[in-house]
Image 1: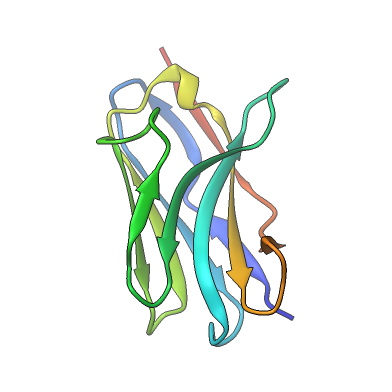
Image 2: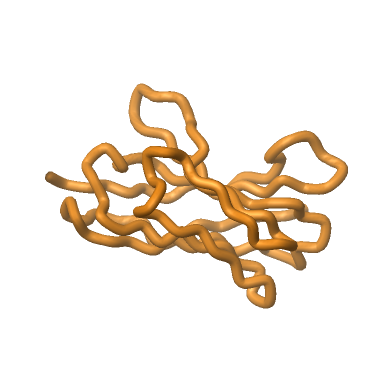
Length: 119
């Protein structure tokens, strides 16, 4: 079973930066893509950024385009989310997820890490 563990969340002032990490518990063979999602209080979970595991192709939500960067380290089975120019509206629990071959959608999820941006 693939387990994902996020780290790197915390409290930061508006305009600051944080780097989130998501480590996979075993070899990532069979993963098509990985993504970061977030969920703010009272809101639905939304996709923030995705990365194709083999090609490295990335996609971003409009709200974070130009501020966030998703990357991966295949050797370390880790995906990162560099978050710059943070805004109070970025406050949320951030989750990483894996889209695995043979399964529908993002089927493996981490437990999340809290990001709080103060104004």
